[in-house]
Image 1 (cartoon, rainbow, N blue to C red):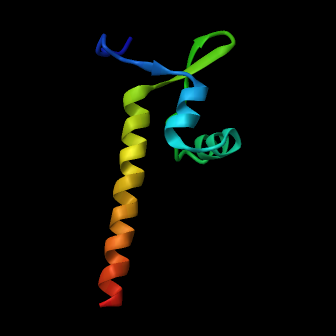
Image 2: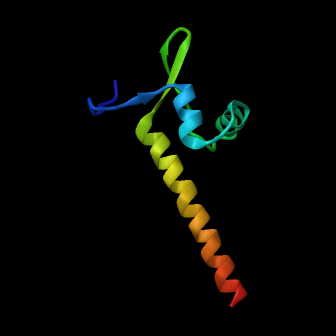
Length: 77
């Protein structure tokens, strides 16, 4: 078993969708494409996501957006 910190927080689908501002179908499309953290099975009929992985995904989208905006500004100069 992997050595994981004990303060790991899990979030369920409705919270993931709310925090990421995406639809359920977009969530599935991103997971299938390998562009979103995969959920973990927490019971036979329930999954959740590691909150810190979701936070990193959001942070990466913000960084990517700022990078594109900066390069567009530089091209326009």
